[in-house]
Image (cartoon, rainbow, N blue to C red; front, side, top):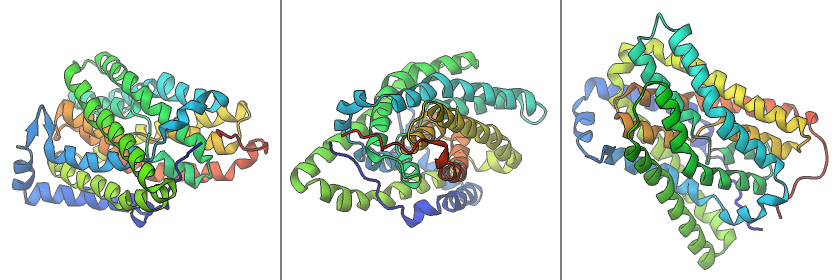
Length: 355
């Protein structure tokens, strides 16, 4: 079976937390001292979608989608236990624990610090993160935990397919519960723009490059060309979004910390639910670790895109999704260390194969 191999981690990826912080600061300073820049860029919209941000998000998502080998789906039935863990945690547990934890902190614990209207917006952003499990960065986390790359591809591939049908109704359900009316057409448009189109483009690109140049060229020469483009798109998106968010951040710096608290708790909780479930079911470590990482991390590109489309780039809901980016990287690196120090928890049976 053909499989995607994780490319080497770039300088930008190794120091992503630092770059995210610098881009946040740069964006806030632009919004404060050069307000004409975000004001002009905000005028370029179509169907409530910011054209500049859409282009940058495409730069993030498209290269990641090319890494997914959908031919791996044919092998799903061979060793389904790890997949069942991933699917159950991602779609039956994670969105609802995110809603519960975020609502508890925003409405109860931080009640004196966050007004009800702002708490509602923050909850909306948290829900978008919780309903968007990771589809791309998980290749990095799997690589760092020495995960089975073929099995990780299958987990990611099936997760992408489930997103297409599950993301919209789950978000609509939870945001409806939170007192927010959802424009279904806008939500479907976001999923179409930021999942369906880049996914189809990634599949076609992968097919034609491998057909003409071979799989070795695709993995070792073609994909690495896009590594810094993906990170560059992310960082430029952060600069632009934080330029829109400058007033909110400067007016509520404490809220960055308040938002981070439930996100950190949620990420850690979901990792251990999946990781310990895999331990109980005696899965090999190279399947258990990626299963935990996929559930714990988020498809923050999609969450950011949908938040912008639904609520506008200046919405506090977008701020939550961006704080999610800042929180995810250091927390996931911490969880990687835990996974690598607990390999003895798992059987030393032969690796699960998907070939």
